[in-house]
Image (cartoon, rainbow, N blue to C red; front, side, top):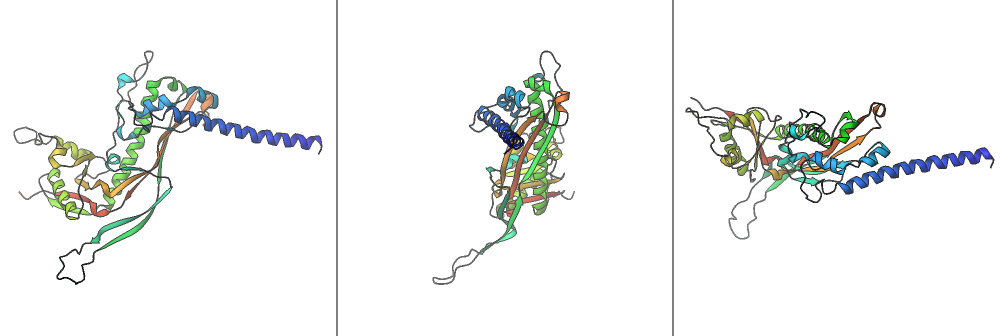
Length: 344
């Protein structure tokens, strides 16, 4: 072996080990951040102010400065993200940001969350009318007993990936309050809005329709609740269009008094959720045990300077991502009710 071959072999070995070392550094950063943020990430049940606060607590800035990127950092579920007010944003040297709006998703919170390890789910789904209940009193001893049946379709669905990114300045990483605002009010809240809207569309599409005659949607909900009870299920949740929900809360009598002087959820006896994906004039009433939200990847946030010309502009890219699938097992436990006003 001549000197050129030896040099080439050494260069190849050096390149290979350098890549291995770089990969190991990234893995170590990821591990350190997960260890630092496991309590704040909601794994052990510790209280934390917001997902953004959990991220800034777990974010390893020195490691990021060395490598130019972070590992994926788990954050608490965006389901119950707390509000961030303008008074909490910015520093003494900078004015507050006008990013105080905090969206609280509703439908996401209506179903149990189940950790899921695969990229696709195969499960049986009972269709509308798929349960044939033939239970009957036996005529005489020795006679054949009645036979009931369940017809189910095997569903094979891919777990959806939801993600988006924003570009912000490197200085934001030094301002924990500003970074929390971006995480809460832009990244995770925006992700939650889109997931919530998709769930609403899925439920409205699959729910069998029910038209009732009633004075208002609160009364219509009670009719739908009875319909579900007749199907052998127990209604737990009513989902309304946001505008309809506000209209119910602000209904007044002819003398100007609020029609619902008590909590609306107590009035109808169900959990209430709201969302723009629910069509105006309709209400979804369902048993929350008919499905589960399969979580392939809980919400994570990743930061990188290795994107486009970030390094030259002192900018960073923040990426939020989750992978979820709503698996519905029994369509007999959901009803989409619309209202027909009574005749005058």
